[in-house]
Length: 116
Length: 112
Image: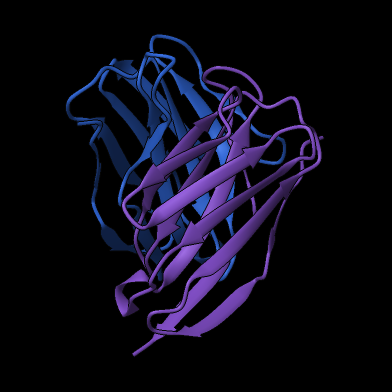
């Protein structure tokens, strides 16, 4: 149990276009989901905390108008990178927390975004 | 501000060796600690979760210990195999459902 599906696994887009990444909890409900960014050879950097039915909470330095997060249901959160530029190229990973105190965090398989 | 440190940054061992990965955190007021594995270009796979009230957790060849008062955790891998080669990350949070703070990871290579 506790499976998080992230789609797409990789995407290449042109500079100036927008890309949407989906994160789904397949077998549990997740009131809260997290979006991370990871640069090569580095650990995960939290971008924002996504809460179902309310606005996301962004970490300092993360542009909320560029990285749009929508958490419209208890099983789906989306991250849209708007007007993507080459510097947005990175590995994006989502995480979901099962609504119970006995479980940890489950991560998606990640999305490799390349902006050309 | 919570800071998590993992030592060593990289480790290379021959197959069959037992090994220990270390994780330390600056603020002992944690809710739980979780060990993850990450393969290149992949997401994170949860290995072990230790609640703050627990001292250790075991799963197969893996054993994780937690000494909350000293701000330390270790991940013990017995009889290492080439398939164990990956980056191992530890992470802590301070309350239920709060953000995880990650260490930089230990890149493990097990040589056949």
